[in-house]
Amino acid sequence: MVFPVVTGRTGANAISAGWPDRDLELVESRTFDGRSQLLRSVPTLH
Image: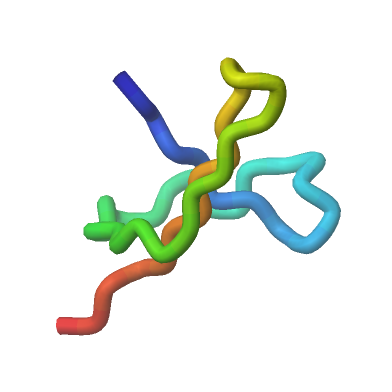
């Protein structure tokens, strides 16, 4: 299960606190060392 968090450029703080939920589209995935994954998503436009 993945719970994405939208962060700013530094990745230090969530910038979506208080915002409405958004649908996300997975645009990239990479696996490192056979276990860790990077999943990059973007908000979908409606």
